[in-house]
Image 1 (cartoon, rainbow, N blue to C red):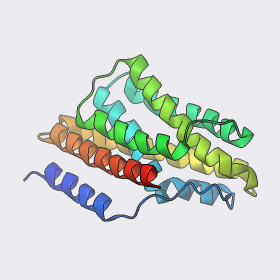
Image 2 (tube, rainbow, N blue to C red):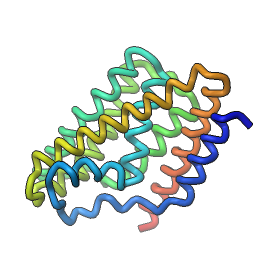
Image 3 (cartoon, helix red, strand yellow):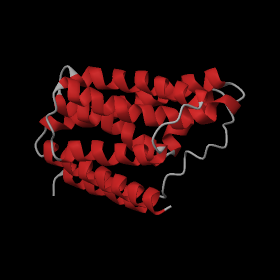
Length: 198
């Protein structure tokens, strides 16, 4: 088995053994830069979706390698504003679970979406991720610091996904990336099962 195959299997084992995501409780946040920065790394659903945005962009190549990591944070801010204002949207946890399932599936199936379609898919899911955190944000002691930390961490996760995507051109790299996408999509299916069962 190649190094990339072993890496994909290790990542899959880590996802299978990890706990489920319970990042969006709607109970309010502590606020501040550090909690905002660390939060995306503690919610598996957000972490996987952010990596997928960069990874799918890298898989699709220019201009989407640049466009998707810009579209997501912009629309996430819009979603956060909707959450802070209490504007009703479809079930947020359902949208977040679907984001992991669909983005992972797009990578696994090597979906070559046109720029507009990939942007719409990423933008729609970004609204749900932003909404979940925007709804919690008004009770934070330092919402601006929290938002800055959260946005920076999200950008770093996009860049991590792009870095993984560069393995595509190495021997066995495309297969390893698609395998990782399948594992992430499967994790999204598990999230969806939990949401529908609750």
